[in-house]
Length: 357
Ligand SMILES: Nc1ncnc2c1ncn2[C@@H]1O[C@H](COP(=O)(O)OP(=O)(O)OP(=O)(O)O)[C@@H](O)[C@H]1O
Image (cartoon, rainbow, N blue to C red):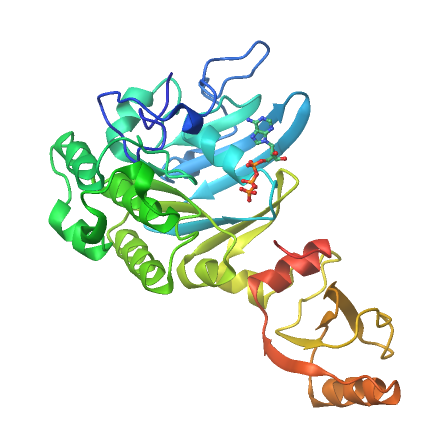
């Protein structure tokens, strides 16, 4: 199996293979009949993109004839956090796994640190860290032994003691991976992914299942890595995570990119499907389900979940007054009415009419 991370998801790039829980091993990255392997140099990657840590162009991947990634483009800069967002099943993990060399694309080009994740897997191994969604670690090994083992494979590893302290691994250092909780496994997987000082790190839902304190430790570490010049590509469903960490955001839906840019640009500038300038603030409230979208003339009212409403468009004092008057007229009591800054969730809703999760 060729991949950036020899023990798929054991975090980093080890030169030595080690046994994995077979349930965590993605399909072998062998070329498939008719595939257009990303190995071949492609003119799709322009000279100006050579210095980017990750360049994906026109990526396509199907499972059993069903296309789940459809011509996707993605760029990740060095020294920046790039968040890949999208609803369940959008194709995020498949995309990342193609970049990690764990899956073979049907079409398109993938360049990782200027190299091909399949044909240049050996050269990329010491330079790329991988943290898979389920941890992907061998289950019979004790947590600290695992981290120390991986650290010894590198010429200049990070200090294991410091990582252990930073990510709170000490309390379960002698516990085998199979007995770790989901959040503990995630923290160990992150430590393993970065202990070799990679130039590019893939983090698939890095803080999923973590308590707030652990999440904060992960965020601090990710920010620090970014400041050291590491390129970080992460997928997440947590909008606060994306907004806190990401320099660049790529929103994926049905296997294709529907919006991309800096986090700031996306929430402040025109991201509407019709090209109109998006509002800077959003009004949200809860009330009885089933209110008509045209409750207030000139106001676009959307029921994002039963009984939860979002008003798109410029929101000012008159908007709030008109809305509450219309609700009072119908004898509807409004709850949790807030006017807030536009979020990435709002961007997604504007683009697709659906919630991100
Ligand atoms: N090995 C596989 N065989 C068949 N279908 C698969 C396989 N892996 C993923 N899929 C399907 O491909 C689609 C995209 O899955 P993928 O995991 O890439 O999405 P995702 O955006 O990462 O979703 P999530 O946010 O839920 O993790 C889904 O419909 C999924 O069921």
